[in-house]
Length: 105
Image (cartoon, rainbow, N blue to C red; front, top):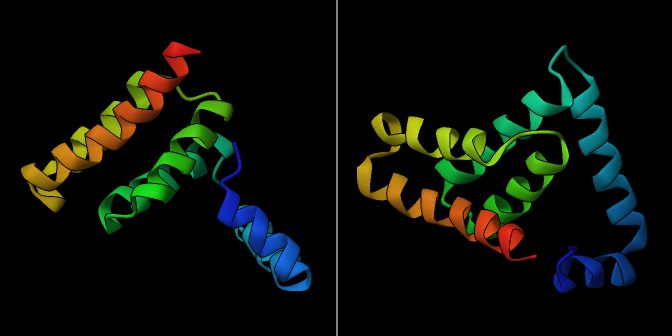
């Protein structure tokens, strides 16, 4: 599922979005991490930064990359010592949003 605002950016600024996506692709390919590892790192960054929309997106992408729901939950839980327990609980709820939606499909 691609969010409507992201699709609108593509239609409003196609050159910018092509460059943005090429930058993201180049960053993924710049090192030795697997697609699964990159997906988990991006999820962790989104959770730590408190970016709900990005966290939802990166959960979906991580599942597509072969991660399990338990992998995603573990990323959220292991963040607690760094971002604090209440913030981890918020982050974990975002992970559960995506897992619950997947289970309902």
